[in-house]
Length: 230
Ligand code: IPE
Ligand code: IPE
Ligand code: MG
Figure 1: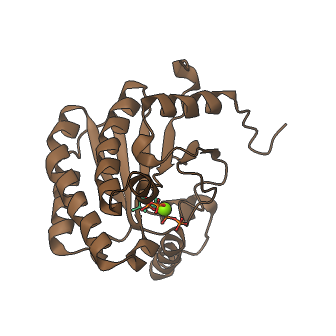
Figure 2: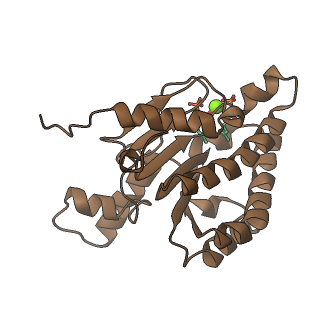
């Protein structure tokens, strides 16, 4: 087990492979999303246990709206269920729910469930659990530029750009994990990932358990981060 000094402060996960996992087992894709959502619960607990301060998960991208309406609908339903069912326990465990992305594109019922979860857990500090919803890094950057213009920001610096992103109150991710074999960012945290370590695994998200997570932490502990230095 990796010792606590070598634990990343911020882990971000591209939770991919729910559909393929389900297909392999002869189930509809939406069943994969259901089991994938259950896995989120386990991984949040494990992050708390391992002393990770920030966990960010990519749950729904701006591009995922292109999927068939019944799949998008099933994902929205799972989202509402997740927020309604988990908020209380997250709060008891000191987990603050946070969302990045443009959820104004979601229906009022979904938005309400999300806002309620954020509000109820706002004073928690043990783990900041951020869910990327209707999130796309390019859209995030465009929004930042527009807001900087609207605020008449004169002297744009890297720090100011960071403050205009959805992630303004989060440190950059130290480790980005992507499950299910694809090795790409798919429009996730482009600006913030400048010096992140990447960990790719063929394991599909519903099967990515504590043991698999620990393997990613072990790999991270072996990496030497230079940030451009020597
Ligand atoms: C990830 O699983 C969850 C979402 C993108 C919502 P996928 O649904 O992308 O699963 P695959 O990649 O098709 O297997
Ligand atoms: C990335 O997965 C988005 C999420 C995990 C929410 P996708 O399945 O949408 O990515 P692509 O289409 O394979 O790039
Ligand atoms: Mg996918």
